[in-house]
Structures are given as structure tokens and as C-alpha cells.
Length: 178
Image (cartoon, rainbow, N blue to C red; front, side):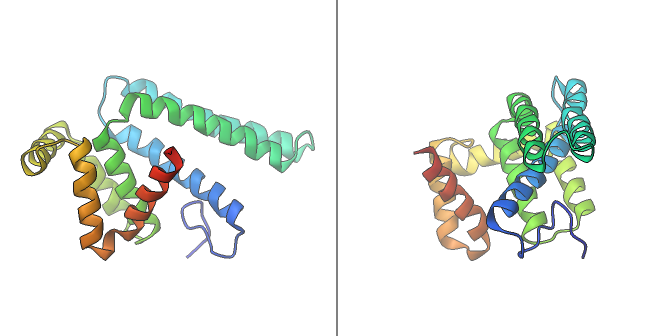
């Protein structure tokens, strides 16, 4: 089990782990944007180049002693945030965010096989499947990820221990927004 951005080791400090987790989340977001059909899909293919090219350029500057590793991290993180802004602007509906969060948690916390994970994500991104899921959610909850969905989500968190990582993430996000 090697060390990668997705498999962050516990021996890292909390700030390093947070940064590496953000980098991993960006990788998930970028791939998810490529697997989700939308009107700007071709443009989003180029959007991720900001991450790839900025990292290569910044690493060259670092190796030549022009910038420090902190400068590299700050500029690279800024590039990822800009890229993510455009991804969420074009793909960021509730279904995309739910699938993305589920994929991230299933891979990082439960170590689901990446091929199974991304094949499932791609199948769930087929417009006919997405429409059927949204219709079923609307039928079950009377709401397609609106206010009532929050109550349903909180109820599900109270019922199932398996959802604790997702529930804790939701609580953290809710507290951060306040």
C-alpha cells in the first residue's frame, strides 16, 4: 500500500494531511467533471490543465531555487481552487455533489476499488439514470435535495453508523457556513 495523494498516511501532521486531502478531493472533482455529461464537457477537459501545468512549472521553479515549497503549495492550491470553481459552476448540482462526496468517502475511508468506483460513478452519470434517481428521490422524499432532504439526511445519519463519516462531514460544513 504505497503513499499517494489519496492514501494519506496518519503520521503526517494535521495541516499536511488537510492539504493532501484537499489535493485528493481535487483529483476526484476533476475526474468526476470528465465523467458527467454537460454542455461544457469539452471545455472542462482543458480546465484541469491548470493543475497539471502549474504544478510542473512551479516544481521547475522550486528545483531551481526560485521559490520555496510553501510558495509552490500556495500557488498550486490557488490554481486548484480556480479550477474547482469552474467545475462546480458547470457541474455542481446536488446530484453531482452527492455522487462526488460518496465517491470520495468510499475510496478514501472504505478503500473501494477505484475501477469499480469510477465505473459506478460513470453509470450513475448517464442522464437517463440520473433522471430516474432524481424522480425516485422526489417520489420518496417529496423533494429533490431541498430543505426536506436535509431532514431526511439527518434522520439517516441517526439510523446508520456506516454513514458517520458523511454525517460528520455534513456537520462540519454546516458549522463552517454559520
